[in-house]
Length: 288
Image (cartoon, rainbow, N blue to C red; front, side):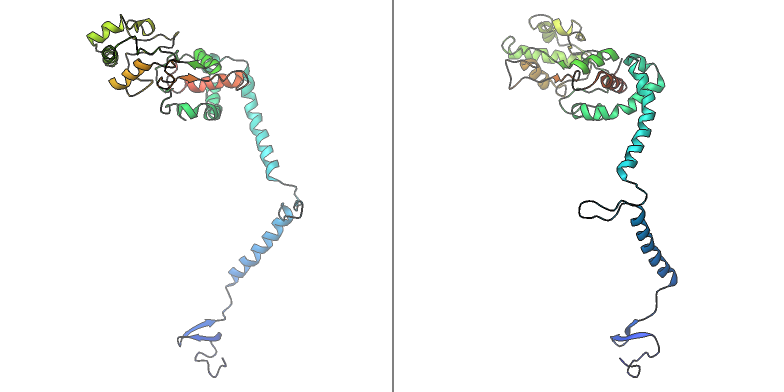
């Protein structure tokens, strides 16, 4: 549009007018903006010269500094390993119990074994030892085989397998119900007379759980006098099921409860890692 026909002459617009007064101006951008624009492409050029950047047919430009992310990672790992090395060397010469007695080494072990626990144990026991459904809680003081550090090492190394015979066939439904009511009562510090008579007599439950129901670490039998339940919610119904079908009873493969912990010793984990894991598990709060 010529200036004669431009309703806004000498304004510096392009001559493109819309809706009588909406127009496109030709004002240059601020100098600071132009400086930023040119600085940005200069930085990009310098970056591609200094660092690996442009892909080629079978490789890429290497950059004049020779820097790579993988080399920086390796250098960082060397620094970390140098720090870890002094601790790992000390741990190798100590037992798990001796590690617990050294606050500095104990703190290091707990931090460094977190990954070991996550990779090997958390799937069943939960990331904080709270136990996923159907698996033991590690963050309480109820330990079937004992919670001292040496026993934890043994459990991790060789695994554990629970065993409780099914009482279906040896006890009537009523007798199983009576025993279940006594077991639930014991967890509350009470008794059920009919159930107690079967518990200490025909049912022979005392042979594993003891006359007082407190269990036996050597046999891995549960303490029935606390409110902690390995299976179920502690209701009479869940206890009836456990008594009826037992734990790992091969006679009832489809009904029996399963309680098997695999062994991590040998080719799965080194003795060193097992020792560290034991210290980590011990610190959850249930260790003795």
